[in-house]
Amino acid sequence: MMKLSDVTVTHHTADVGGLKLHYVEKGSGPVALLLHGFPEMWWSFRYQIDALAKAGYRVIVPDLRGYNDSDKQGPYDLDTLAADVRNLVAHLGVERVLLVGHDWGGALAWHIAATLPHIVEKLAVLNCPHPAQLQRALAKSLEQLRRSWYVFFFQVPLLPERMLTRDRGRGIGKMYRAMAIDPSHFSDEELAPFIDNVLRPGSASAMIGWYRAVPQSAMEQRRKRWRYPVIEAPTMLVWAKDDKALDYDALVPGTERFAIDLRIEPIDRCGHFVHAERPERVNELLLEFWSR
Image 1 (cartoon, rainbow, N blue to C red):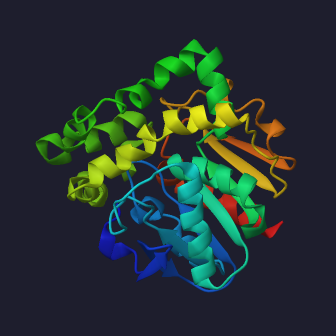
Image 2 (cartoon, rainbow, N blue to C red; image 1 turned 60 degrees about the vertical axis):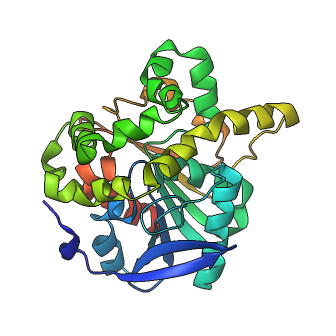
């Protein structure tokens, strides 16, 4: 079990195009920029920060737009979110980063590597399909459509916010443990920062806003007949195969169409939050990938 006091970091705030973005930092060396997913914040990477900093990296983990100590204002489309990250990289005073993303942070990382390739040295994605691969799977795979029920539920006004915050966020802990094969890293104390995050005024609506931006963005892409550029940066996709929300067979094969230099690392007997459930293996994979 880990608690907030177990990870010593420096807290900062950056102005990224008029938006206040909070981030934590530890270590020195090449910049490793870690992007969290839903319903998390910088604490998502609690098991990576010390390990990567000790290995010689400057670890930067922001609270993405709408989350925790960062401003809660839209829009939440991937282009806007990518601009936040681009501006954060400029604020850090570096040209390129080792980019890591999990869940929604993974979708954002795919998008950045494709559309802002000049800021990405290497890309690592944890349990998140390429956005175009997900769109394809939702159109062709009944299994993935079934698993993605929550995406459609989050389009409903008000009710999803009530679901997330009812009983003081009690359902968040249940969700984490239900998604895990080994729930030992998901105690009430360890998950408390995520619950506090959800219960902040405006947080639930902001977090769900990422999902509510999807239909409009998809329609805009179809209208413009826009296609993702192929990613040229070396790319690693780490996938816990017991993810209850994301089906490996529907979402992973075919990803090589979107990344020239792709390495896929499956992890058996592990759920969606792979970097917390199997942190030693994820850290090992990241450090080996960056050093080769």
